[in-house]
Image (cartoon, one colour):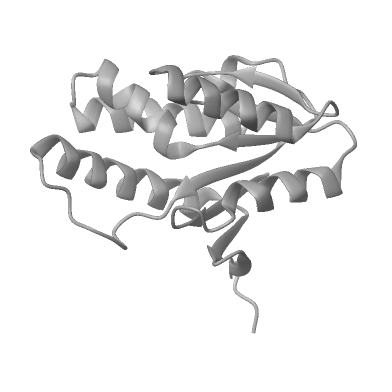
Length: 171
């Protein structure tokens, strides 16, 4: 099962994903997709690890989340934006190659016996990128988000800390 949690920066996406995981299991798993770029980012990662608490099993996976041994677990993957950045950089800003490899990872996750709660930043709701690389990345993330949303069992859009279920559509 894949649950996609999307929204703007600081909309409560990660908090919601973590709370949802803890409501589902006593032994949640957290997969961080970030590279530790600098001291500030390392400090942020440490703070987030401390905030999660001891009940969490944590993994760092810059690209190959599907390679982790996580059978029958509830797994928060945080986040697509950082995950895609790793593919984008490693493929020297070739968005087609980065998107292809990312989709392969998502397809592998979709076949596993886990519940994946995947966090992403909703793209296109803010300032337009000033650089060519920035515009390429916006395209990449937009297409990646659409791909995951299409195969997800559920999609939640966070608005100012409030979860709004947008898939499946309820009438």
